[in-house]
Length: 188
Image 1: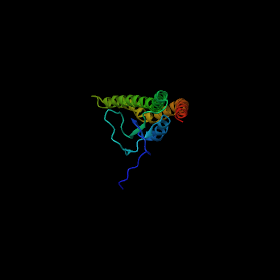
Image 2 (image 1 turned 60 degrees about the vertical axis):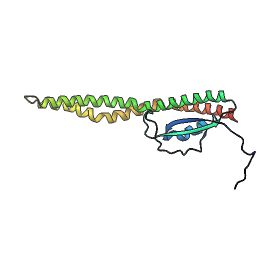
Image 3 (image 1 turned 90 degrees about the horizontal axis):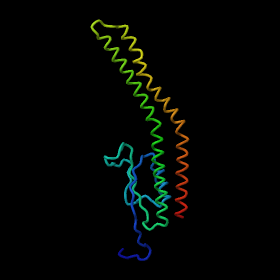
Image 4 (image 1 turned 90 degrees about the vertical axis):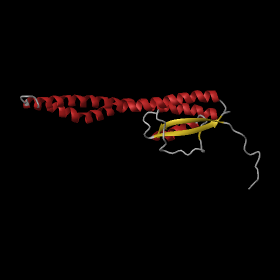
């Protein structure tokens, strides 16, 4: 029990990195960072429901990965440059994916607000001193259309935007794989 084993373990100095990502992208991020010499730090328990700092937007479904790599890794400058390109491509992919729904949400909200304005006009027409029932009915028709149509508008815009953005996302993923391949060649 009290034996000291010498010579088998050489000292390795590590540098550490903290990566904040979505649950869906954990495997993709780990696989990508391995190509730049990073490995998951086994000393830290990775929990999928980690408390993320409050200054990180949309922390729901967010995971913190703790990575480490040898400080004296070969080709460190080139690996770091490739890693920056990798991280930039990942951010672009995330922005492209979120652009699918952000435009659709904007259109749906605008149509819903217009429908609400028509409903307000309809209510004011009914509650006027001499009630204007006909005007109220005329204003209520586009109001209900403005409340029902955002769902369909949202789905249509998401579908069209996905058709436009999907090839761009695939191009970025191909670029990420090329960057990772270059990094892997520098490591081995």
